[in-house]
Length: 313
Image (cartoon, rainbow, N blue to C red; front, side, top):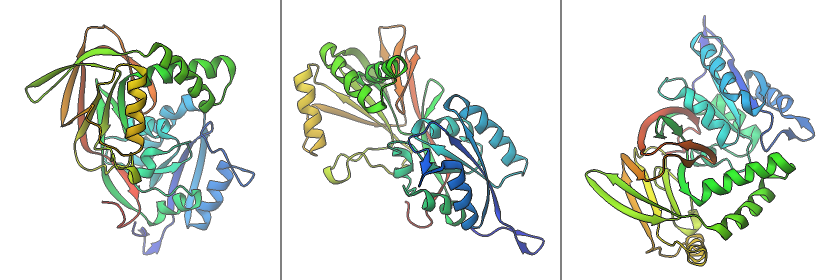
């Protein structure tokens, strides 16, 4: 990003960095994350104010940050955390035109990776000074925004069980997820639903319906990667409805093999109907209870994200 000028003199970019204190990475080199970010920012020619908040306060902090950017108190608002944290901020920043910088401090950081944000903290902070602003798509279901994907079926049940275990026993996220997966495999829920789009409708009996914000690469070497400016949702529906058949499907997907038991829809919008009145739906790994029908739509260019200059298309 070009250096800003004030009265003929260069002015250092003012940054508010809202950091989820409970994110996967909270210390760097033995230092608290806020100390590390402030020091890296100063070395990058930035003036950074770091505001560590707990996960429940991300949305309120992001709202204050958005107002501060609009009032001219900060030039850039950065958000540090995992995909859930980024989604909370993106929900507020969508369609405002206010750029958002990302500090990938979570466990997986899918969205940050797919828009080209470096995983190294120093490089991610430095990018705020050197990167460019690009328009990035989001997805939406029943008014709720998602940045990566939304799913129905086994994953929401696993995620909900994982969080119950963590709240009850204090287990780590990964160990709780493994135990949740074992439990879900025993019950293996599947559901009857219909996908309706563009005047077409198809019924399914499925264990997993997955809606991606743009297309997920299914090749082995780049499995799960995306470009986020295609302006499309990609709906994936699995047909295996037994644990063994689904496990075989998952193994083939991981190996990049052909998946004839997977249906794919490329759409701008879709409606998912099912007989139940309340349905657990995962949005970027977090579970919401929604009332069908589920109305999905793409929101092309809804977000403005600072990304590496000239390296992301």
